[in-house]
Image (cartoon, rainbow, N blue to C red; front, side):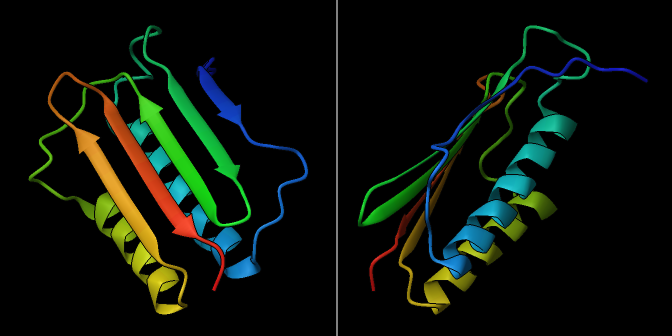
Amino acid sequence: YKFDIPIQVDCPKNLTLPPVVRVGLLKIAAEAITNALFYSGILEDPGIQIAISLSADDRHAILEVKDNGHGFDNRVEGYGIQRMRYFAGVLNEERYKTRLVIDSGPGEGTHIICDTKITL
């Protein structure tokens, strides 16, 4: 199989984050991207796109993963979303206050925002 999957990535080249935050955000991003690949319809519809961005200042790191795919009922949480919430919880346990917001609806795509306070 050969797929040309439209994924846009926006991340500063010299971004420095505490190791725990970096690993936690990578795990959340991996789950979000996996969900988008499985459930957005991107493999069947070339008009669907995934956008990933990571930005940070001296107080917060903000990870966003968006797709314009099928979306889902926000009241239903599958394995991937449970894992994202778990990794956000791990960051909170490590005293990096983290807020995870998952916004989606059938036919509306999915927008995931993870805002992590990186100063203790």
